[in-house]
Amino acid sequence: MKNLLRIALALSLSAFALGASAQGKVLRVSAIPDEAPTELQRKFTPLGDYLKKETGMEVQFTPVTDYAAVVEGLATNKIDLAWLGGFTFVQARIRTNGGAMPIVQRAEDEVFTSKFIVPVESTAKTLADLKGKTFAFGAPSSTSGSLMPRYFLMQAGIDPEKDFKTVAFSGAHDATVAFVAASRAEAGVLNASVWEKLVESKNPNAAKVRVLATTPTYYDYNWTVRPGLDPALTKKLTEAFLKLDPANPAMKEIMNLQRASKFVATKSSNYDGIEAAAKSAGLVK
Image 1 (cartoon, rainbow, N blue to C red):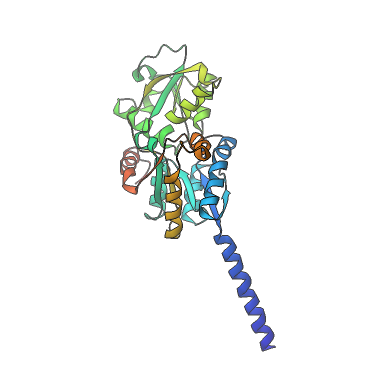
Image 2 (image 1 turned 90 degrees about the vertical axis):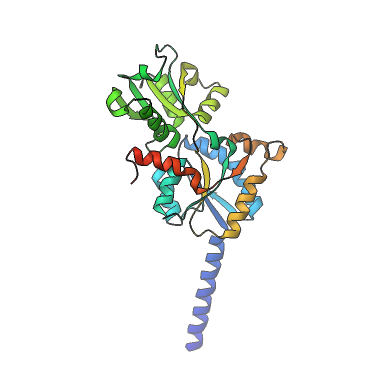
């Protein structure tokens, strides 16, 4: 009986080890839902294949329904790597007591901007002309679709809650363009990258609106790893992103979909300004 128990225990431990080993071979990736789920999946697929090749791990992309789910996924070790906006990174940094670490960002994210848009036929010429009008932000936790535009509006003497007739949240950047194009809002704001993509693809909603103003620059998106991720894997992921080169035909599609000229190393302190903006807006303590 003792021998049987020993064998059973050994088999149990062996199964546990195999399960842990298998789990360790899967890189779990997610992203904030700042665009339609189908678009996020389309953008990630070739990048996921590339990361699989570079790390030797299976890559599993898990879409989420809201920004908070990505933060919780990183904090509870259910997500290893996530594409975050600047404000979502700040939230993840706070939630994990500084454990979540940004590793890379696109060169474009060092000088990111947001675009205020109005219908083509709008008579508005300046941000001040939007007072008294209905307005659409993106998602409440979006850096480029809510936090930073709100911060710059306040600096321009416009309090969204007091000066706009109504304030709505579309949920995503492309949805904001659809809101304004369909007259569900008289103005809105979205990030410059999505705006440029919609214009380039001749999106019918983009043709119905125009840019009224552009914000000053700020740091935005990055790829962040969860607390406690193996340093060797973190290094491997960082190097994989830094190697991406649009001049390389094999990497061109990845970079085009990511709308990146190149990836550069980043650090947590780059987002201190966004945290300051969030504190001034009362969004974090």
